[in-house]
Image (cartoon, rainbow, N blue to C red; front, side, top):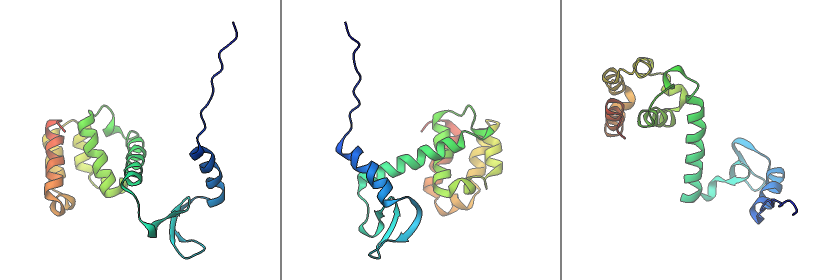
Length: 146
C-alpha cells in the first residue's frame, strides 16, 4: 500500500497575506501612507479604526509576547497561573519597564511573600490612580485565586 500524503491547506487569506506582507512592508511605528492616512504594521489604516475581533487578536498576541518576556525573570519562575496573570496585567498596563519599577513587589513575589507583595503593589502610583483594578490584582497576589 502506498504512503499517505499530507496536504497542506492554503486559504485565500494565506495567499493574499503572503503578497500583502511584501507589497505593504512592515513598519512598527505610525506613518502616513500615500494618501495621508495614519498607518501602522502591514498597511493597517489607523484612521479607519479597528474591529473588536482584530483588537482581541492584537491583545492576545501582545499578552503572549509579554508573557514570553516575563518568563526570563527569576521572580517569575514557578509562579502559579493566577499570580503570573497579575504580573502580566501590570506589565501590559505599565509596560515591561513600568513593571520593573516595582522592585520590592517583585522581590516579594520571587520570595513567595504574598502579604508583602500585596502591600507593595497597593503602595504604588498605579494603585492610587486605579484603586479598584489594582486592589483586585493585589487580592489575587495574596490569595492566588483569579
